[in-house]
Amino acid sequence: MSDPVLALYQHMMKNDIHLQYMGDLEEYESNAAYSEAACKRLQAMLDVPAKKELERFLDMKSVAESMELEAAFTAGLAMGLQLLRLI
Image (cartoon, rainbow, N blue to C red; front, top):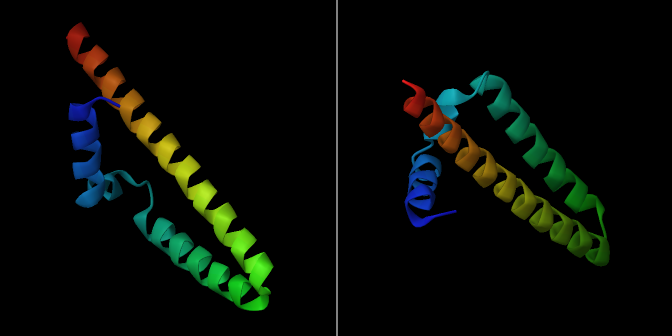
């Protein structure tokens, strides 16, 4: 991701601009809250080694999801710029 695109991406995420484009923000927020609560319940049930393994998994999953989101943002921006050239 180039520096200008990264700056746009960080601005979008920091200011929650992306939430304006959620199809159903209420459903998103509900699912996010439920998944966070479910994760906490699961962690409470696990022994220490299993809890550490879950944390490693969640960290890796978060990195992968962040990479996907950055790629989708970059692709959307690139497509938008290409469409502007057609006008």
